[in-house]
Amino acid sequence: MSDPPAPVGERLVAGDERALEECYQRYGPAVRGYLRRFVPPPDVDDVLQDTFLDVWRCRGQLDPGRRFEPWLFAIARRRAIDSLRRRRGVVDVAVVRDLMGEDGDQLAEQLAWAAEVRAALAQMPAEQREAIELAYFGQLTQREIAERLGIPLGTVKARVSRGLRRLATLMEGRAL
Amino acid sequence: MTYAEPAHIADELPALLAGELTREQTLAVAAHLRRCPECQEELVSMVVAAGTLRAAARAEQAPAAWPGFPPLASTPPSSAPVLENPENVPPETVPASPDWLRRIPRRGPARWSPRQRLVALAAAVVIAAGAVAAGLGLSASGPPVLNQAALRPLQAPAGASGAVTVTAASGARQVQVTTADLPDPGQGHFYEVWLLDPATLKMMPMGALAPSGQTTFAVAAGLMAGYSAVDISLQANNGNPAHSAVSVLRGTLRAN
Ligand SMILES: [Zn+2]
Image (cartoon, rainbow over the protein chains, first blue to last red):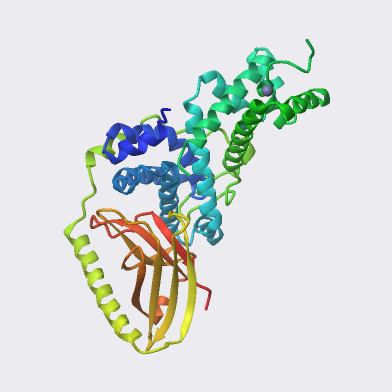
C-alpha cells in the first residue's frame, strides 16, 4: 500500500527540494499549533521558519526507517526552547518547565501522532475524510452529519465505517 | 427472513462505540458480534481507529501551557495579546508557500565560518584534556558520589539506557556517563553529552560518547552547579557546534 508520509522523509534525506515544501504544507499547521502553546505569538512564525530550516539542514540525521513526525516535533520543541531562552526574564519559568519537562515531551509525541493521523486522513477519499472529521474532530453525531451534508444516515454510516477501517490499516502499517 | 440477520453489522460499529445506537440496535449488534468472526475482526479495526482519532482530537485540543504571555517591555499596551480560548481557536493555517520556504533549499547545507569552527575545535581540545585528567583522577579509589541519575530514552529505542554519576575531585566534578545499547549513530554522526539547566535552558557541550561504554568528563565545581540535567544528543559531524535537536537520552540530577 502506498504511504506518502514515509516517502516525504525518504525524499528529504535524498535532498528533494519539493519534499520540503510538501512537508511544510502537510505538517506546518500542526507544528504551528504546537508552537502557539508555548511561544509568544509574535515569535511563532519565526520559530516555525527555524523549525523547517532545521528540517532541511538536518535531514541527513533522519532515519527513513523510523517515523518522521516525532523527529519533526522534536525539532520544533528544540526551537521553541531556544526561542524562550532568548526571551529569558520575559517568559514565565513555568512555561519553560512545561516545554522542557516530561509533559512537554509527551505533548510533542501525542501531537506528532495527531499529525500522522491527519496526514493519513488526507490520503483518504474526500467523502470518508469529511465524515470522519465531522464525527471525531467536530464532535457531531452521525445523524447530525447526515443533516449537515444532506445525505441519508446509512450513507454516513458506510463512509465512517469504511474510513475507520482504512485508517486502522494505514496506522497499523506504520513503524512503531 | 428476520431483522436479526442482515448481512453484517460493520457499518453500525462506529455508532455503537460512540453511544449513538438505541437499546434494541445495540442488542442486535451485540448478538451478531457474538457469533460472527468477520465482524469481530472489523470491531478490532474500528476500536483502534476510533481510539486513534480520539487521542488525536484530545492532543489537538489540549489547552495552552499558558493562556497569554507577558508583553515585552517595549510593546505598547494596545498590542498586548488577548487570551486564547481553546474552544474557539479556529483551525491552524499557514501560508501555502511562503517566500522563506522556497529560499531554504537554494542555501544548501549550512556552512560554518572559520571562527565558529575554531571555537568548536578549541572546545573539543579543552574537553579532551579534561577527559584525560578525569581518567587519571578516577584511578584513585572511591571518590564520594555527589549525585547520580538514570538516563531515560527520548528518541532512542526502548532498550537503550544510560546512567550518570557525579563525583568530587579536588575542586572539580567528574561526570561519568555510561551508555548501553544506543544504536550505531551511523556514518557522519556521533553522540554528544550536554549539561542542561531546565530552568534557564542553558546548555554546555561536554564531548563525544560511544553508543555503549563509559566516558568521564571533568567540570569545574562552580560551573557544574549551574546545571541539573544531562542530555545526550545525536549530532551530525558537520562542524555545527549547536545541539542538533535530537536528544536520545536524558536524566535529571537531584537538587543539591
Ligand atoms: Zn458479521
